[in-house]
Structure formats: structure tokens, C-alpha cells
Image 1 (cartoon, rainbow, N blue to C red):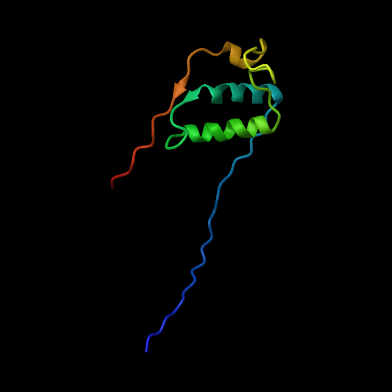
Image 2 (image 1 turned 45 degrees about the vertical axis):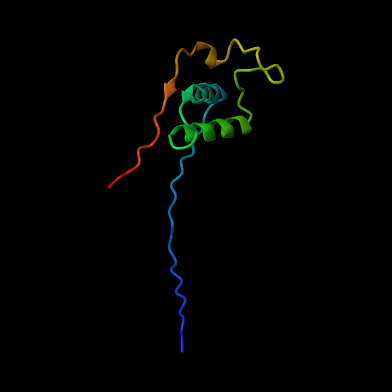
Length: 96
């Protein structure tokens, strides 16, 4: 006669989070930086900048484009001072 046994293993998963409190000007500067990051939004650290961008915008941080206008930029936004950009390479697969 066949028998079966179910085993349940419980694990505690620890997740470390960081809370950063910024002034509005600091948040706009961070937003300006994260939009200048290029690379694949999957498989590179850029996916984290995408997440930061979304969280900052959801919190009401002003983006460089004026709402509803799209192409007209804020002259006093930190983005207007940035030149160039940054690119993350894709994560390398660990073959070990």
C-alpha cells in the first residue's frame, strides 16, 4: 500500500529597506538623475531607477516636463543643468 507524507518547512525571510527623507528640491534632483540612467529596465540596475522614478512621481515630485504640455520644460528644474547620461550594463549570469 502506498503512503505519502507532507512536510511543511517554515522560513523567516528578512528584507532590508531604506527610508530616505528628502526636501522637495532634493527629490527633484534625484528624479532628474534617475531619468538620465539608460540600460535595460530588466536585467540591469536600471530596473531600480525605474522603480524610484515611479515612486517619486507618485509622491508628487515635479518632473522636468510641465503637466499636460509634454515638450515644454521647466527652466528651474535640476534636469535643465544635466549633461550626458549613465548606462548600466546587464547583470552577468553567474556560471559558478
